[in-house]
Length: 162
Image 1: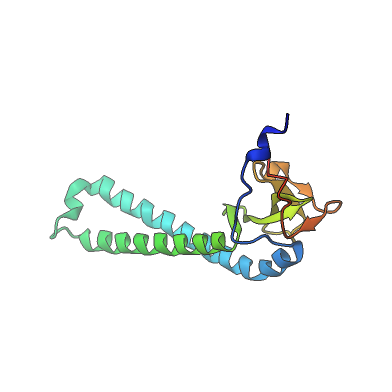
Image 2: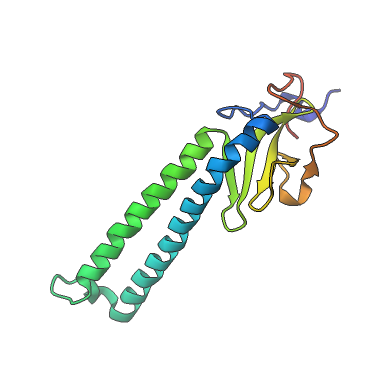
């Protein structure tokens, strides 16, 4: 009897990264993460201000002649713009085979193949290069050093992530 995970499909990300490619992408990724984090922080502040206004004034803040109506409308538009920008940035990274796991920590995963298994190369802001990996069903706490492992570009069709 075979392993019950043998029938699981291998994920089909946009691409599989080598360590060298992921390290090369870090320079631009650092700037992208800073922009995304700044947008997320601003979105939190805008949302808090909208909540403050609606909590204080209730539904009347939406009245056309209310003195804070213009401010609330501007904040709503800014919130919508920030959400769209964040979604676009995150989707663009996902389309590259890059996943943001924790924006505050700057934790990012790249789809890769290590020892013929589809995994994530794991990098965190402050690290000089990608030096760790973990299984798709694992996370930061389960990451292991890349050093003794073989990184490839295609998964073996007989192996699937576990």
